Length: 186
Image 1 (tube, rainbow, N blue to C red):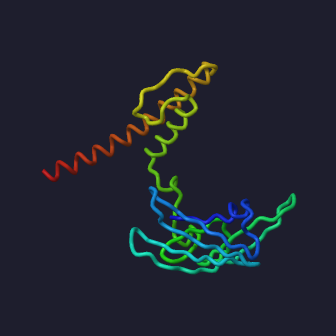
Image 2 (image 1 turned 180 degrees about the vertical axis):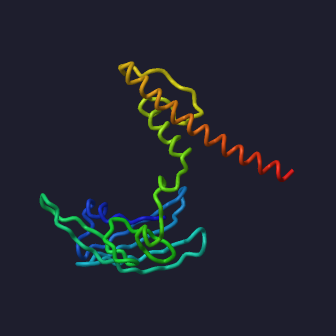
Image 3 (image 1 turned 90 degrees about the horizontal axis):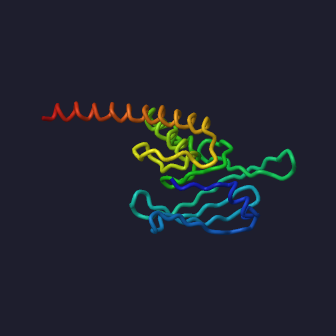
């Protein structure tokens, strides 16, 4: 989903009352959304066109309230008040003609949806990155990086092998289930 980050807008110096600016979102080189943002003293007006999953373009207008919190060492930090639930959030997501927070749209982080096998493969890739090897548990192992202590290399190699074996075990279980389903079809 397309998101609107109030922190980024503030860093770019755009959250000044009376300011009007635009943004566009593209996917594979094709425009999938555009927005015109008008900043007022305590809220922003969002005027945008949206196409949901290749459907017709619809014109939408939303007002989102702004809140500012004081930082400990000076300055102020902006927040959106979610139009759906009233929470103070940094990101709002666009969907079906409105902007709301991830809780209102029931969005989960990628790590919340991944299986144990996905987690093991991700951890193995993290170790592969440290070793300078190409990502992917199916790729061959590389050499010890120059300058890396032997004990560090063996520790990372052990971690990589454990995570890879967990990923392979999950792949094997998945293939076993697929094989059982194929036998039932025959």
